[in-house]
Amino acid sequence: MKLLKHLHMRKVTYACALVFSVSMGLSASLANARTLNYATPASPTDRPTNQVLRWWGDEIAKRTNGSVDVKIHWAQSLLKYKDSARGIQSGIADMGPMTPEYSLAITPLLSVSQSELGSGNNYIAVEAWRRAVDGFEPIDKEAARSGLRPIGYYSSGVRVNMSTTRPYLTPDDFKGDKVRLTPRSMNAAKANGWKVTPVNITFADFYSAMERGTIDGAQSYLYLMPPYKHNEVAKYVVEPGIGQSMIVVVMNNRVWESLSDTEKQVFEELAPVFSEKMAQAGLQEVDIAVDLLNNSPDYPVEYYKLTDEQRKVWEEQMVPAVDEYIADLAKRNPAATELHERFLAELYNVEEEVREQGYPWQRN
Image (tube, rainbow, N blue to C red; front, side):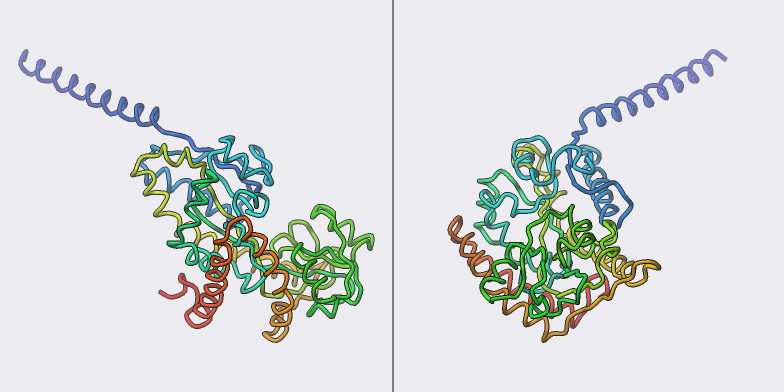
């Protein structure tokens, strides 16, 4: 009987020791977990691109066995979007998305990603850019200088011309209208003698300006129209099919260097997966936006996609403005010219590839 009691006590002691050991291991793992702060302008909705962002954060924690935890700071709560590059560079945030043109002085090569020629399709633009920068040494040197390491890409997607007077199918359709143009479209207007009156207003004023007649139209992004209810004041929407704004997800370089080799490998392996998933989600958001614009019970719009001939007109007339933009970037970094050529070539290559084979997620 004493022997049985002794054996029982040994089992209990061993079990307690095991539980204690496991709990201590978990506690140590949690204590060693590192939180990286991700600053984004996006609101914490359930839109497809936000779902991918949450998946990415969870996947990082999973693949690093909990050594890295990503905390997402939504709706510019940590950084104003225009200040993203400087804020991440200084360490206010560890990583997050940025539009390179807001920091053109420190990231001239990344600014080449902002296109006016070639497809504005989310996937085509991102994949073309990824191929253009793959093995391009000057982009790595720029990252080292700026302290901003790219860890993923996604695109704002297709631009649109929205208007109240008539659809802007070609530049000839402006007919003297007051239009908020993108900076390079303003340069193209001067170079080609467009009959248009450029109006400089902020995005936040688009709705009221069109409602009051201060402007007759504006160049914007398709995915932004439904949430900002621009279809309530615009009657026509034209998708030219060219031009987009690349969003670069960057990490503070000091933070990157502080990661273990295993953790760096996780981020590197996830980069192309993240970019492709974000492109697919962006295309889903485009479809949602088009459906809402066409089928709104109260404020439907007339939605136009351009023919190849109409698209060619826009591209040809944008060339002088693009050349001027790239020449300005090349003054800051001569490699901008070569990178632009690589990017433009890949834009047409990937567009043809998608036309013939479909998207990667459709090929299996």
